[in-house]
Image (tube, rainbow, N blue to C red; front, side, top):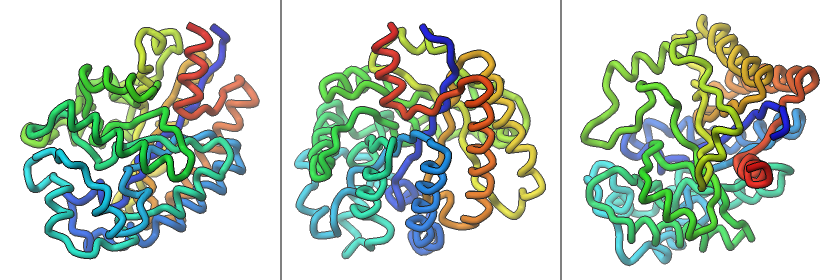
Length: 325
């Protein structure tokens, strides 16, 4: 296998569909309003620095509006706990807002930008570890995700599971849809995915927060040889790019140093480093978040020139692994 490190970025593009069970739409409105501009600026940076990115997009975002959505709901809906059930939310909410729930023009803009992969975050932000759902319902969810992607002539080849929940039975279903890559979780105990009832422990949350600034869990980089052991290919996460907040502004240099140390390790050792975040994270404090992102991308260019570190989206990584078993 050729000796080179790989820099992968994936984004969980979900708008309010990914926040419904956390905050009210009103409470998150500033993030949502700022997301379109943030996406435009991110695309400019990705073009400037030749960054190949995977945009794992909730299928609902491909639809035009509230009326369009209600025409495309599945016959057999999962019966999650009401507080996390998007279908319950849809049933009780009239005239879903455009800015929080639909983004066909942004999907088009992303798809037209070179080296940006439109992947799936499932049709309905589907939770595979929760009670009240079946493999049959998951299969129908992916069918609908591909149907709405067809509107843009997009073939879905990669997936990011909402809340990073997945299990072997669901991975097997991906093969039926010719999905070749998914984003797995970091190796450390602190990043283990849990269901709604179990909840992420306070200990995990504190450890994850600290790990964003200090090297607690290691670099979380991966040899390309290790990724070829199974299909669909697991392209695991390395680091969540925690968004800027004024309360932790003094720690921004530590966050950047943590990420740069990881990237350097991956580049020098010909390993994969996978950074991820949500576009709506940049909806507020956009300037500060983009400033951090540009520092990271500028450092990527340094590593590219010195070590041959290469930017690849998830589908490109999977294609490379297939060609070099």
